[in-house]
Length: 448
Image (cartoon, rainbow, N blue to C red; front, top):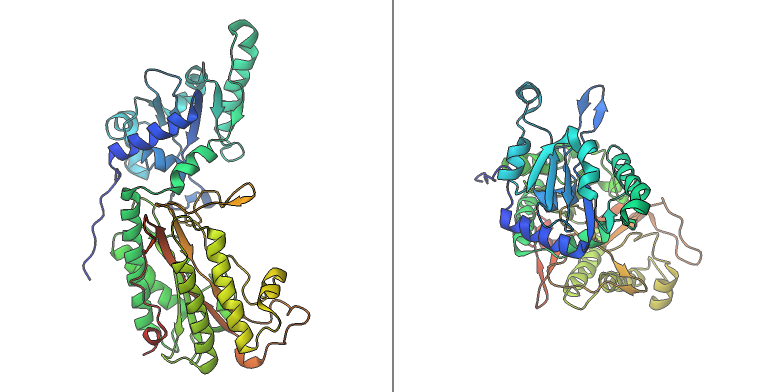
C-alpha cells in the first residue's frame, strides 16, 4: 500500500484560520481572550512526553509549538491577533528542533504582532487594557493564570481613576467549543483521511490475528500502518482485547495471548497531521469462526449499531441515537434469555446496565472525546450538519458487575464475551455519512 505523504506544519490554509479567528472574535464582542498553547510535560527525569498541542490553541492558530500564548483582542482596531512564542535560538534548536520564532508567527501563521514569550508578563496588561471582559480558562494553565489575574487586578486597582476595567473573567470555552462542534468542509476532509487510515489498519489487523499471537503483536500492525501512512500515530491508547479482556472497557495492557475460540475486540484510530482523529471498534473471532453464543450477541450488537447509525440526521439528538441502540439491545437480550421482564420497564430501571454500561457515542474531532454540549439545559442538543459523533453500542458479559435483582443469572456459556462495534458518523444536510464504512462489520465478513 502506498504511503500517504502529509504536509508538514503549517498544514491549515491561513484563510481557514483567519475565518475561525474572525468568528471567535465576533462572539467575544468587547472581551479579550487569552488562549495558551500546551506545555511540554515531563514523564521521567528530564525526558518529555511527545508534544501534543492544545486543541483550542491549534484550532485558532495552527501553531504547533509548546508554551506559546495567543491573544485575541477584538477591542483593538489594530493588531487584534497577537502571539507570544519561543524566539529563534540556534543553540536551543540544536537540542530540541526548529522554531518558527516571532517572524514565523507573523509571516506563516498570520499574527498581527509577535513577541518573545519571556515578554508576556511585561506586555499582557497593556494588551488587555480597554477590554470589557477577559476570556481565560482558569485552573488549566498554572504559568499563565497568575499573569492574567495580575493584569486584571491592575485594571481593577486603576478603575477609580481610569473609569473602566474588565467587568469579569469569563471562560472562552462555550464560545469556542460551539464553533468546534460544527465541522467545516476542510475539517471533514481531514476526518475522512483519519477514518480511511484507521479503517485500513483494522482490516490489516483482522488478516493477521490468529491463535497464539500476543495482543501486542496485533497492536504493532495497527500502529505501524498509522505511521506508514503519515499519521502522527494513535489517537488514543489502542485497545486490543482478546476474550474476557474485552469486558474491560478501557483495557490497554494488550499483553495477553490470543486464544482459539475467543473474540478479539480492537478499538483503535489514528490522529493525522493536523490532529483530527479516527475512532473505530471492531470485534471478530480469533480463529475465524463464531460460536453460536458469539454470533447471537454479535448480530444483536450489529443490529443495534446499524439502527443507531440510521437514526443520525438533522433534527435528531445524540440521546435519541443512544435510545435507539438501547431499545434494540434490550429486545434482543430478552429473546436470548439474558434479561426478563417488560422492555420499557427494563430500560427505565436500567436493568440492562450490567451488560451495557456506557453511552452509545461521543463527539469526535480534534479531540477523540471532542468538545461541545450534549444538552442545552433540559433539552438535548439537536444534531446539525457538520457535527460528527461516534456510534458504538456493545455488550460485555462477565461477573464484574452484579446481576440486578430479578434478572436471570448469567450462564457460563455467555461469560467472557465482549463485543463493541463503532463507526464515526458525520451529520449531513440529508442524513448522515459513515466515515468509517471501509472497516467491514457484517458477521460474514468477520469470519474466514
